[in-house]
Amino acid sequence: MKSKIRSWLLAVVLVGVAIALLAWLVSVFLNRSGDASAQLTLPVTPELISKGAYLARAGDCVACHTAHGGQTFAGGRGIESPIGTIYATNITPDKATGIGSWTYGEFERAVRRGVGHDGSALYPAMPFPSYALVSDEDTQALYAYFMNDVKPVQQANQANGIPWPLSIRWPLAYWRTLFSPTPESTVNAVASENPQIARGAYLVQGLGHCGSCHTPRALTMQEKGLNEQSPDYLTGALLNDWAVPSIRGIGHWSVEEIVDYLGSGRNDKASVAGEMTDVVANSTSHMSDQDLHAMAVYLKSLAGEGDTGRAHDPQRSAATAAKLTAAKDLTLGERLYLDNCGACHFVKGEGASRIFPRLDGASIINAQNPTALIHVILAGAQTPSTERGPSILPMPGFAARMNDAEVAELATFLRGGWSNQAPAVSADQVRQVRTALTEGHAKGEQKLEAGNDK
Ligand code: HEC
Ligand code: HEC
Ligand code: HEC
Image (cartoon, rainbow, N blue to C red):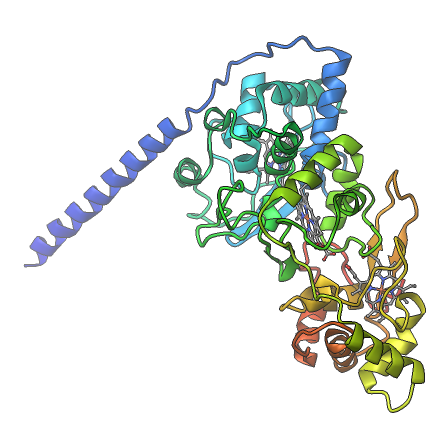
């Protein structure tokens, strides 16, 4: 009897091993995408190199491939994922530790196909499902730039913090085959009768990889759509609990206002905050007016209203402004607002065009999840300095000046004041955000120091 069970077990193990081997073999085959020995076909001219530099901005390669305080493109920045930290690699042309000895084909496979230098599958923390759309010519320009104009930095790559067996890479080849398009399948994918919309779609869907934050993900982690053929595309998502707005249609802004926001981090209604701040500072603010217009026109062409916050309600707005002006029988939240915020955002909550964002109707205040609002009150925020808007406009953090219950009262007032209508905030919710910030969970940035009140 015992030996029967034993041989039965042995059979199961053998079949299991055979299936795993076969799956692995097929994955090796799946990784044979592209041609690792391909060479540049375009002549390397100063124009091609500067075009590549521009495209590297549009693709925001620096965002992930540069560690906080580290050397440009030398890698080492950790990206949190549900299975562990994935470190972006050194993409400077250093021969020993970077991509200096790579062929064009090897570079192309990594960027557009998610196949690494050693032929293994890359984690989609590298946004290759979006970059698959990048044209041959633009990929060549990127390669010309990285090889010829980026300073080589010798810095060894950091091993990923993913435990075995999750660290086994070959199953990723299946993920990629299921969810990431190949460059071949995306040729002419963004053809539109309107060349401006086609250019905007190419940038937003491709190098801009805007969907990686603005499109909700499925359980298997792929974006629910990579272009407007999916009704979920760019409909907004949660990023570390921060509500990322829908950018389909953007009904509350004009094309000019979108261009302003992407180009300078501010417009007459809002200022950029959260992870979008770095996107503006590193990427969109360096793009040409023509390309920003193309992206804005494309986003406006998508069916949807965007995340409009709350429509202006003149009666409720006036009532809140009157109560704050009279300054009688104030609730704790109202008093905290007058004492700490009114000097910049004013009793009408209207702010000042291109300087202090509007709070009346703002989507960050009306979002169902209050994390982003609490985060801004505790840690402050900063409109980045860009060529189009050089002044840095800081909003101080109030972590050291208010306790959890006070921040909750203040946030609850903001979410019910003027035209705003969103559920109250509890001290417990504030405590959670404060803890995450103090421990630097929020991707290592804007970490709260004790007594931080810049
Ligand atoms: C959102 C973050 C992110 C952005 C943006 C990004 N990368 Fe990456 N990239 C990564 C990560 C993470 C890896 C490592 C993936 C892995 O280990 O599987 C990677 C890997 C690579 C590799 C492969 C390295 C190797 O050792 O095989 C290359 C080449 C590369 N990226 C180039 C680029 C270029 C060029 C751009 C801009 C057009 C870019 N990346 C933008 C996160 C990013
Ligand atoms: C790293 C994540 C990330 C990426 C990539 C990203 N965004 Fe954002 N975006 C955000 C977040 C977070 C906000 C909310 C900012 C706030 O709360 O102030 C935002 C806000 C916006 C807004 C303001 C919308 C509104 O109605 O308030 C626009 C427009 C926008 N993004 C466009 C883009 C475009 C275009 C791209 C691609 C070029 C892009 N974003 C890429 C995270 C991202
Ligand atoms: C010294 C002037 C100043 C004070 C005081 C101030 N703010 Fe701000 N606030 C700003 C600036 C400037 C920004 C834009 C920063 C940025 O780019 O997000 C901002 C941004 C914000 C935002 C984000 C708006 C958006 O659209 O992303 C919120 C919410 C906010 N402030 C609420 C408050 C509250 C609540 C207080 C009081 C506790 C306060 N502010 C005090 C100047 C100020």
